[in-house]
Image 1 (cartoon, rainbow, N blue to C red):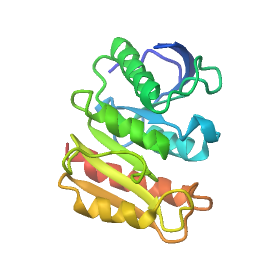
Image 2 (image 1 turned 60 degrees about the horizontal axis):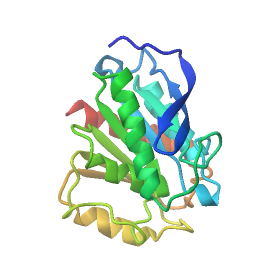
Image 3 (image 1 turned 90 degrees about the vertical axis):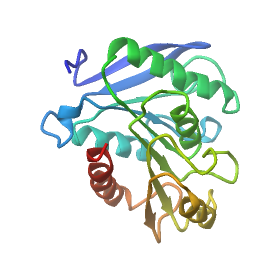
Image 4 (image 1 turned 135 degrees about the vertical axis):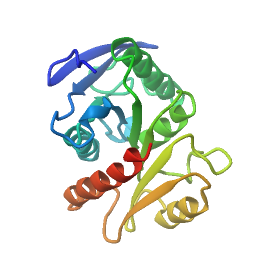
Length: 221
């Protein structure tokens, strides 16, 4: 697939209530999955609590995909950074991600999609996985399952990776582990015994572990 953008390029994407600020990153041509032409869309944590596309977990996800040869797009939800509009309690933010999907399909129509999100962003990514045909993979980091509904009857439409720290101060870790163990669809858990919500000190390990997980799960698709 011909990639029509620069190695790293800023965009303003038309959204439901104005422009959405985004950055596209070209996948490494030497990455193990470069031949697949995949594109990952990454959602940031809660806008009201300082979440942006520059969050370190978000950029770690981006680098993981990029180094594997997967193109990656991160963006700011409405009201964050240079994105227009204001926070809409996860309703408008779902529409924001769908607008990004629409834009991607116009510019890279052949690219199979992967979705990822951190904390609040994981809920948005999870819900959109049901709305978009043929999503290849879903990565959920520190999903606040006690506050949002994620699966549908224990299933997701694609392979799933869940990343969680035992010492998360914002998400009930044990609840996440019980939830993952009860899912009916294919899911892998990356668990870090001493990691908090933002995975300080664990981001490099997360990148390495997620790289190996993605190679296992995506190569089998």
